[in-house]
Image 1: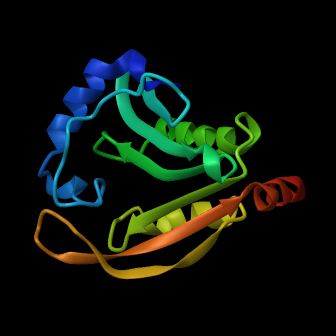
Image 2 (image 1 turned 45 degrees about the vertical axis):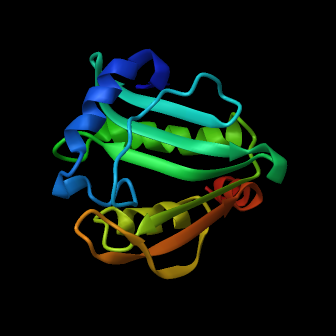
Length: 169
């Protein structure tokens, strides 16, 4: 179940500490360092959610909002703390994405994935499902903690395209 992250702040901090320098999560931060996760104190700039099952945090979904750019969401951050993908987390992610356009009425979502991340193909499908597109690729744009440089694939989903895709279904 999707919950506001601040309610699960301590659990989330522990979960984030557990993935520092874990090879499985090297793509998540999109950087060569990890910093202390902090819960947002308001929803003006950040929307942060915990995916929770039976009181246990199983994932995290967040994004930032650029109010000056006409209420645009960007910086999508998605992490599944479970060993295997779960239906609960997938449903929560779908709900969070739909909320961007249906509940919060934001006009656009921009996000990226580090090329090579196992979730990349799912992001391609997700973008297509919601009427988005792959904008392009920044070559050798980020350095991860393994010391290697990686490309970043950029996506965008416009509310009008999301609405059109939804009305077709």
